Length: 113
Length: 109
Image (cartoon, rainbow over all chains, first blue to last red; front, side, top):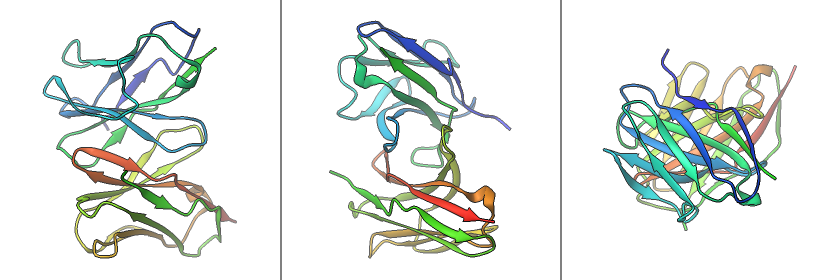
């Protein structure tokens, strides 16, 4: 069964460093998303991406964040200068049709020290 | 501010019982509704989707939607210990998915 994959599973970085989180969505899916979940809190929407551009973004997704689909399979989230409060699980998700069933990857745990 | 509210629990039910999970949402124009299960330290796993008023059944799971009351629920019949997890309600408005904080369910053997 096809699934969303994410790498790395755990990333530790120092405050102020740049990180890139990688995702491979399900191959025939067209809509891609990034979410974050701070420990013990709810899943929060960051950004949606369709047709090689951002569809929507939340207030969390400020200038420190960017997304890219550098080739036909990868979907990346870059955080330019990490802060302590960026420590969270970051989930990538995809769906084949807008507002349809969405499938999540296993997540990347980002720890900023 | 679009809100999705769930009782945080914990909800405890004995094995074999029916577990009832509830969710309310604030935005009347929300179109699509989903239930996810999340085990500790894992990603959300889709259980059910529901788009129109009424009930939708899938195995031991039944989702119920009442758009007039802005309410969606999930019933789990014949609850099993493996159902112990946090259940997330997700509501779609526009192209954004809004998640509740989740209800923690424990099924006691």
